[in-house]
Length: 346
Image 1: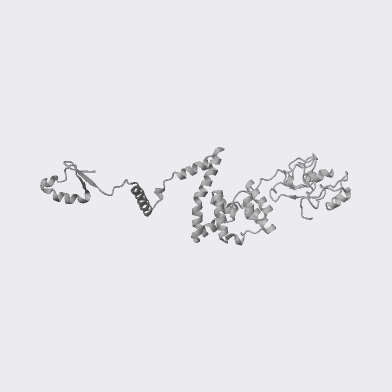
Image 2: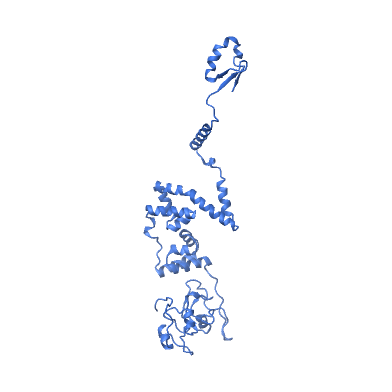
């Protein structure tokens, strides 16, 4: 069977025999139309194409699987009807494929038409959770672990963690990897760092506001990122310089989310901004901050550099630098114990 790809032809006129031959030798029904319930066509037959030729069956991938997980032909008049479900109800084997997941249905649960026939057994309990089934489907379609993780909305690390804790998922994925020859390793060039890549990641950090989103966009793992941060002071300074800008972007996103009722991120950012930075400072940082504050106060003139005194009896102003000489000169005119009694600081 050729690769199933959607048809792009303009539906040219052809006889029923030519039409059946074009679909890979599909037999004709009693209405002289290709019977897709009896044979699998060599390519997809969209619903639009089948209706253009007045056919009863279509094989359209956009319709997805039926409720019993058959990927088979559907009725053009009622796309809920699946050809393989009808075959199973008649006691025949299905001829189309099934989903790579959800193989727990052996037959439709609908009762057989023959009253004397035994009822179909109840389906077994599914082994995989819905999220695990989504992972398997994404992996089967993309054949890449990183792309599969992105499709289901998680990181590669989270996908690996899910494989570690879910034995049923791990068994299905191992079987799928062996059957489709899927590589578990990451691309070799993922750890190569260039100045362009550093600049790209820095800009992505500013635009998204989160390092995890920036690393995912640039295809960089957390371990590679932190390893490069330790080995490259230049890159570390680029990221540190981008943090305030990224925080402003994240604050804008939080404000927009708060406008529609989600205030969790905004509260978190405000709480983080209210944290006391002094609590995390070292002694050297505290001394440097104290010197800076003293210098700022000194520029305003609040801190005096000279001290003077005024003698109450005469109103004479005496500088602190000249106070010792003044006391020596006037010591005879006043008792020694009261030498500075009438001096008032100004």
